[in-house]
Image (cartoon, rainbow, N blue to C red):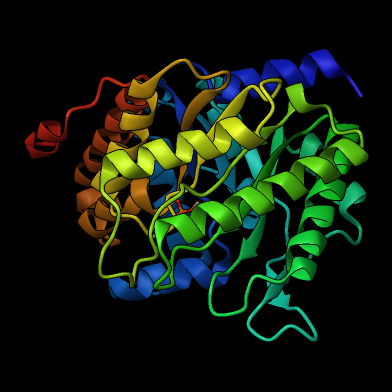
Length: 340
Ligand code: 13P
């Protein structure tokens, strides 16, 4: 393991004012997104959509890395440049989703476990040859009556740590993503309790598997009320609870924390990140690794039509820029009104 190289890549992924675009929707997930705009999901429409995002002029100012899906890592621009080469040329680190999604956890109704460790060492070696320098593995923890169970938290944390150790052995920076879902009706306090328990277990297992903390990125949920809760906590409460929880559980050796958006609106995800960076005095960089919160408006504006590529790119650049500002605590909600 080349620790210096891992550290260099991890720091680049959370460089000041920049963050990560999660464009690693699986074939099933991107179909759901395309269904909403009435676009058929084919290898070519998926390629065209990703090309629109990656070739948005100047996106490298705010985007430090892009998480790709296996198919996308093997695809190229219309002009024949491999996406991984294009991104690298722009100074954007290409990454790859390596988990195989979630499956029901037997014996634990309503809970899931992430698959994908089998053969992972071999796949990582290939991904490195194809240009990927970081990877992502998402564990999912749901909150409801009686869940999450200890078994679900422990099993998912163990897998995250084994994945992270395999990545580092292949000179690939692991993004460790334990996502506590915000789908339920739970309070922000419940989310804080569960997120605390999950992070404690994750770092315990990372330590046990000798993962080099300086060469990884954490991708957590924010500490936030469930979407079905009628009394949702305010943005300052979310920022405060999230920073408090992360300070308690994430060692300062970790270079960066890049949040998932998890179903928050675009403006909400940006506002929360900004408020956290305004609190300041943080031992790690606090940035974004958003999927939906960077792509939503861009995707609907594009709508699968060639003549809308420039307009879709403007919307993507607007979100990238606002999140770049939020990553340094310089965003204002009023900026949302400005034209893309
Ligand atoms: P969202 O920001 O849409 O939650 O996606 C981020 C991600 O990569 C989830 O794994």
